[in-house]
Image (cartoon, rainbow, N blue to C red; front, side):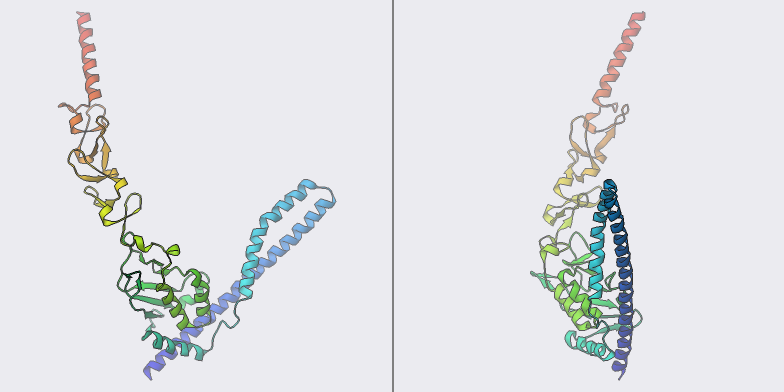
Length: 333
């Protein structure tokens, strides 16, 4: 009896939420209808202006109006298509109370358990382990937010939560090839999923989402399975395997071969950002193995500075200045 009361309470919440969704759909139809009517009135006015311009021989004006109509055509087509989609949608958008109650019973039969959280107003199911091409991603929770159903036409009212996450090596937000940030890339299943929620077919909704999780489409994957265990180069972002990564001992980050080098002085692996090219010998060196020339303040490797801390150019310039000074003194004597 307690379980039945719980399901009745849940059914009432879902039924009310679907009514709000239907009201939202009707308001959208009203908005689109108004926009469509405005576009029709605007086109009628442009038609009258165009006819007047042609009759009076105002060819430049007629051409300008024609260009305006041409620019508005794409926008008009968009409004027309959206208008048709909303007007032609299934009128049986709101099921009755008994239908929804039956759906909840069917979910329990299909998934074994329906998780209900009245405080957060969510219902969810747990899938079995999802395995794609021998990659195990563990089970997922498909969580539907009851209060978010009314936002179906603008945002997804459900989340896909990894129970035992096995995220992509270079992006922890991607827990499944088709799940990023707990949002599912529905692909061709978008229309069917939306229709299932609209019509209160919640068992079909959970089943459809589960089916997408069990399917791998490399063409629409956030990250392909071939790159799943790879890491992302901190600099360029390219995916790299563990064998192809280079660890910079200065900034504690991983890089690909193109974004890493090693210090020719201390033989330490470093990224390009933690190294410089010695202006004199052109060797790649880490910043710890450089010194600043006391004159020009450029950084060189230790081997390219003399004992006085001068680079070759500054040393030559100092010698030249000293010789000139000496010659000047000799001339004065």
